[in-house]
Length: 154
Image (cartoon, rainbow, N blue to C red; front, side, top):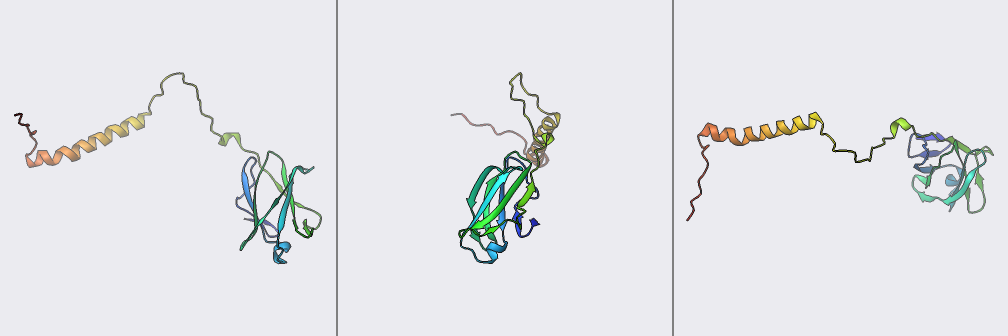
């Protein structure tokens, strides 16, 4: 998904505490820079400031970073010669969304008692057993070959 000026993410939205791949095909890529670094931080004050060397591919320079719990992801790019692409001194700033608690499933890990099987599960087991018996024994009853074989004991 393209968001701004030749910057792509491998996801539709940036969500806190996830890993995101950033692809860059901007001016440093177009000028055939040998090395490009992603210079990034979080929030208004660029907290947790970090820099990572990007890997050159046919699709542009790419890097993976872990997003922390913050309001925004701020970044810019530089090459090995200290030439910067910082969005005309505006930097690249993207919002980071919070994880919705409704989507997080919490399991009760206490062992207070045995769990009851769902009725649908029990019924499906009964139906499968009935179908198995019909398939196995119906042809024998129709053909008259339903008597059990008696083993000879010597």
